[in-house]
Image: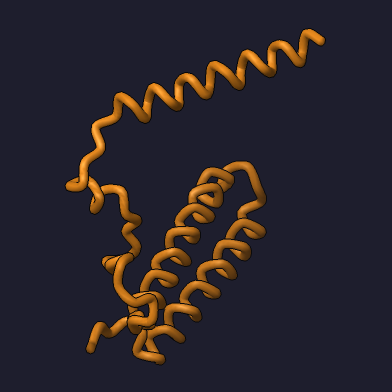
Length: 116
């Protein structure tokens, strides 16, 4: 019974706070642009079938891959003194070779050249 009473009180208080925020907020027609979502420079009120630059998407993916790579290299540097040098060197070398092969593939596919 106590849990039901507390739940009802919480629901009433949250509804009062939401109603107060709607009454006290200063919304106007000018703020319509601020309230609309913004995705990659597209106007959300226009057609959703506009062509999207695939090259922009691939550059973003390359950035994310190298961003994750940095997050994986930092722990490798800190574990240098804690592990066997030969195992650490082999692991680091293998990891960096995989990244360089990916970069070479992107370079061969001309994904790093920004031409329209």
